[in-house]
Image (cartoon, rainbow, N blue to C red; front, side):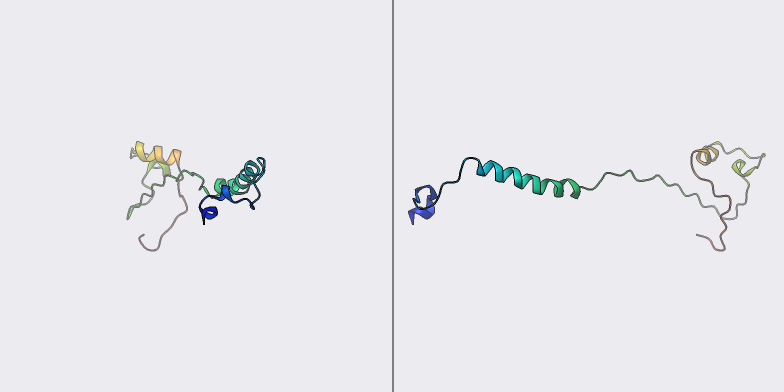
Length: 93
């Protein structure tokens, strides 16, 4: 019973070599470390999407060639983003 509580008193049990424990720890880290590194999700930046939807608007914006209206903020968004010039809808979104 005492040998179960204090394994160092068990005379029949071989003592591990001093090299074995650090070697086992190093091998365990080498085996587990790739799984930990690849399990972390990569930090990706989410895209900024601004979808402007207007009903009953044709090409009445300067970005589509209109000269009578001034829309500096929308023009800047178009310059820095994407402009759909062939997008047609048969029903409102």
